[in-house]
Each structure stands twice: as C-alpha cells, then as structure tokens.
Length: 89
Ligand SMILES: [Zn+2]
Image (tube, protein in one colour):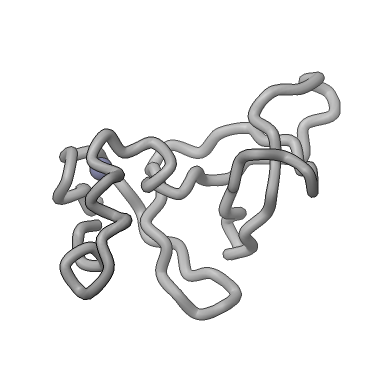
C-alpha cells in the first residue's frame, strides 16, 4: 500500500482511461453519478466521473475512489506546478 508523502494517508493508484495514474484514497466510498455534481470519483476501472456523495441509498451508482487531492490536508502542495507537486503522491 502506498502512502501520501504529504499527509501519510494510505492511497492507491488507479490508472485512468487517459493513461495517468491517479492517487486516490484507499477506502472506496459510495457515490451517486451526477453530471452536475461537485465531486469527482474514480471508478475501479479508471473512469473519472462527476458525482455527489450523498443521495438515496437504493439509488447509489456504486463504489468508487476519491482522488486524494480532494481530501488531502496537504492538497495545497498538489497545486504546485512542475515535477515537485506531481511527485507528492
Ligand atoms: Zn495526502
């Protein structure tokens, strides 16, 4: 299991459909797919979707992974341009 170099949280890398490895929180969560949703979720097969994280339980889309930059307390570091920020997680 990989760990975030910024905050030490357990993370996993999911290869997205664009070929990039996305650092995500290791724990999958329930999401509701919503094109207008404010959240982003990475599905286990690498699709990045807009979604909500609340909704009616029986209408949940499925389980996915939150990009770690959305939850990392050190997320500021992710916004740096250049190789430094990209290497953080
Ligand atoms: Zn982190």
